Amino acid sequence: MTLSRIGRITLALLISVAMGLGMTSCGGGTVGFMWVLGAQSNQIGGFKIDNFTGNLTGVIGSPFKSQGVNPVMLTLKSGGRYLYVLNAGDATGTTGSFSLFSVGGDGTLAYQQSYTSQGTFPVWITTDTTGNYLFVLDQHSPAYDGKLDFNGSLTAFSLDATTGRPSLVTNAQVKNAAGTQLTYFEVGRNPTQMRNSSSCIYTLDSADQTIFPYALSTANGQLTQPTNSTIALGTSNATSVNLGGSYVYVTDAGSTDGGPGSILPYTQGSNCALSPVTGGTVANLPTASYPIQTVTSTNAAGTFVYVINHSTASANFGNSSISAFTIQTTGQLQQIAADTNNPFPVGAGPDCIAIDPTNQYLYTSNQADSTVTGSRISNSQGFLSQLTRGSNFPTVTSPSCLVISGNTGY
Image 1: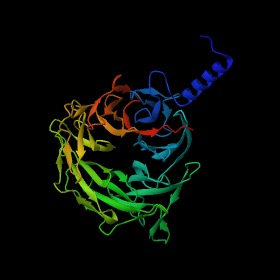
Image 2: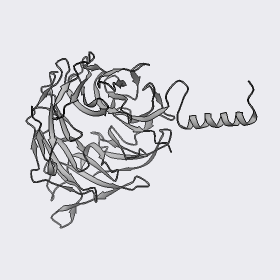
Image 3: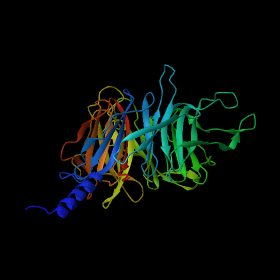
Image 4: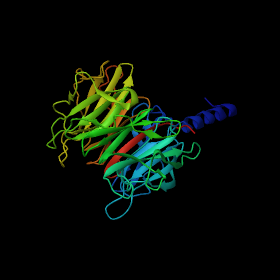
């Protein structure tokens, strides 16, 4: 059949629209974008996520330079138009920094500018739920009244709604000896990561195995210490803190000999207080080893916690996997018993985990073999299964973390 001139024009327009939306004839369109940090190569790998298969394909121009040394963490401003990459620096004297990138409609990154926090040795970066503020966690705070107290610190920034550029938020509660406001907020010793809800920020401090909470004001980005400022975990090797609804989950890797470790569930109370969930500590799956991070997903079947197991602290990553649990109404965790593939195997040495915006797919970045592992989340029971076109994808060298954004569509 020969198309008329109007028919040909209409067909061309339809194809153009489909391409603009990232749709293809063999997939379900681009459901989102993923960016993966390469710690050794100082690069950012960019990928499109196929809606129908979960398959990853490279973004045009990928990999991108991280614009710093030793990128360790990244975060997105809500809406997905701006990406912030935290570069830890190195022992040769290169200081830590964070780089601002604008995100194109096709997932490409355009470098804008680099900034520094107030402390040194940055380890974590995050934005608040409104997208108006950004926080950088440093292992060493600035000199407090001229003396180094060995605590860590948070630097707070407000974010310009149009450009994504950060501006320093000073500490309105504390002044230095000269009578000026501090430019940071102190936390405990040797902090390793932080998580935030709409009203609280929790930092995990490894030196004394505690969580240091701050109440967060979304009106001005101020952080206020609650009355009970330190929460003792009673762990020996706490590796992560994460939020799942009204609950907070802490992973404890235990000893470094590759044991299964455990997960500690807490209920969030008023003024950012944490109370252990009835039933207490949950044992990790017996065949899992060295849990280091969690992520939470909700679908029609319930809410689930997925725990990435690094395997061991050594170079042997034979048991790298994901443990899957259902969150009960009490906040307690229960193994997904119907899942015969639990724990789910992933690439060697996973260090970061994320779920796509539609809650269909879960991905880990794997430091030891420079891959990303993808899996499909069951809508009926929450268990994980292999992707239909293969689950392992090569990426930038020695990935340290990844982040996923929805299809920005602009």
